[in-house]
Image (cartoon, rainbow, N blue to C red; front, side, top):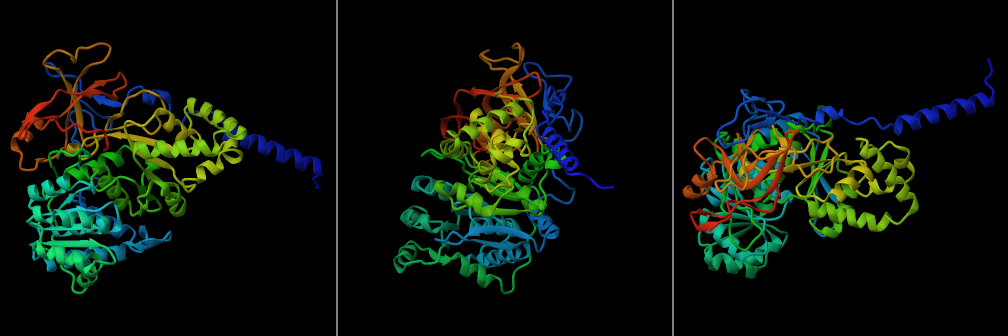
Length: 558
């Protein structure tokens, strides 16, 4: 039977109309009822306390989540899982110095580098593996700092990230507190380190991620009883006859984190392997099943070595056998880095996301087609839908999405991020966003906002599955658990992600970590009717080992 031209045209037209209806349907991504109660709330509560809130997956009476699998107990186990899952797959992507081309390395190759640097490190320093010896990492987020950190996990050393590369005072105080005997340093931070060596007498070996080290720099190091070695040479030499791993225990210290942006040193937070594995598990558990990380995912993160979120985000990607991008570190290259590497997961700070929003809005915001497309996508967002398949995604917003590489499916950030920026990412770019709240003392995570909660409410989401949260009354009566319409008080957190304590500060530890294992955050909060947490501010200062200071409060980074 012959089909005339009119029939063909009508069939195509019907198909197009049907497709447009499907693409532009306004059915929400999640049933609204599922957002009305996002936490599990204990039926009983203590005197002058709110009810304990948990993730819905771990109600009262059940055990908080510690690890993704029974056999995964340390960060060394996390690496081994990724290696076994994707041995020949892409693991690292990083830019060569002074070039705009990216190098890629497989899990098998990176594993050899980790063992090589670890072996070379032990040979050059004569430090004994498995002794929890602190080692500094005075370098930005890079392939060298990643290799070093993984090597320390493999051989039982403790990573001490120092993320402020401008303050000699912080460097000196951290080095002297921990009595570190070795440090990995970026080339740009080497001059400041050398200037500080006279006050850092414990440092004897410096591993520099650099192509060139001058004779003058070597002379200065020698003058202060230290040696300078090239990171790459130590790694290369160690690849011959690598040492067997000295597997850490879950209770072993993995990191001492002095996370501060001021000129005064904050307390060193002691985090174990178990703490950081629990934080990674809590985050991945908050991802919907279809959105979990896989070996096909690629993470581009702007969180530094000093941000614990960077550790568990990277660990989550490694566990899945996915790949990690190390960006150039320059704000002007943020979009270029993403376009060149096409990540699927984009983890970044609020300020960087807001600058991306500002730059894209300046470029595209005045166009009439963009305005129409954005307005239509905002309407879909208000109806509870984030999509990249609407008609407007094809004719008005495709180029906007491509500025992050075109493949980003999830943005992970912290609070506070401006609502306008979150709307822009979800509507104009069609990308889901998860915002998290945490403290360094809780391994960087306490709550996570539901990926499908697109409301403008200021809440921080519900507790993740590795910890529980409650509020306690203010002794002066400012906030109480009986407040209406919602209970208020100081935020307390308990779970396997909560720190071991503050480094060599038992008094400060006792102030912040009570006998029942609850960490007192020093921040006021409120539980909303749907079980989510909102931060209201910070407590008054309390006494610690060094006198009077804020109880570990910092601008939310983790």
